[in-house]
Length: 311
Image (cartoon, rainbow, N blue to C red; front, top):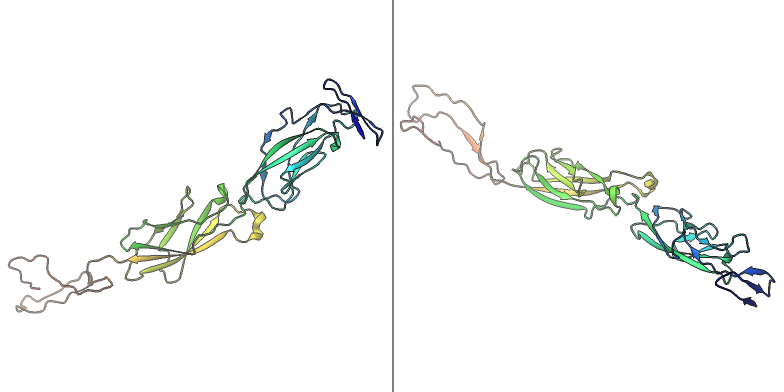
C-alpha cells in the first residue's frame, strides 16, 4: 500500500509499506530543452540506414533534485512509431528498428517519444515530444523506360539537326539521383550514325536528332537501341545490378517526291558539222529516284526559234 500526501508548494513524502523506503513526492513537470512538453523537431536521416542506425538524441529535463532519490531519473520510451524506431531508455538516442527505410515508400515518420521520471516507476510524471524524421534520398533505383519500343516518323528531306522525337526513362529517386545520360546503339545495316542523342538537362529527356542525310529509297526504316544511364551511381548499391536500361527506337522515313535524276548528271555530245537533218546526236537518260519509279518525260525547257535541235 502506498500513502501519498503532496503539496504544490513543496515536496512531501510518500511511504511504501512494501519497501519501507522514504521517497520524494514528484511535483515538478518535465521539459524538453526549455520548451513545452510537446515540441517538433525535424532531423534528416541519410538513407538507406541499417537497423540500429543512430538518428538523433532527445533530452528531457526535470526540475527535481537529481541527488535525492529517483525523482529526476528519466526513462525514455516510444509511444508511437515503435515499428520503425527505438529509443535508448537511458540516453534518449533514437535508432532505426528496421533494416531498410525506403524513401520511395514513405518519406516522413512521426515518432512520439515519452520521458518518465522516477526511473519509470509507477506514479512518475511523464512528458512527450513528437519527432518528425525525414528520410533523404539515395540513388538506389535505376532508370526504367515505360515502354520497350518507341516509334517515330520523319520525312527524308528533314535537314540535319532536326529532332525526331523525345523519350524519357523514369527514375523513382529525386534530385541529382535522377540525372541521366543517353546513348544510341545503332543496329547493323543502318548505315551508321544516322542519328545522335542529347539530354535535356531540365526534363531529363532523350532528344533523338538527325545527323546524316536520310534517304527513303535506300533505307525506309532505321532501328536503334537507346540506353539510359544514371550520372551518379552509388557504389553501395552495386549489388542491385547496372543502373541503366534500354529501349528500341524505330524511325520510319517517309518518302518525298524528288525530281528526276540524269544519268550521268552532265556530259558532252559531239556531232559533225555536215550531219544530215534528223541525224542522232546522242542519248540522254533520266530516272525517277522515288520508290514508284514513274516514267520520265524529257524536254528542253526552251529552244531558239531557229534551233537545229529537236526533242
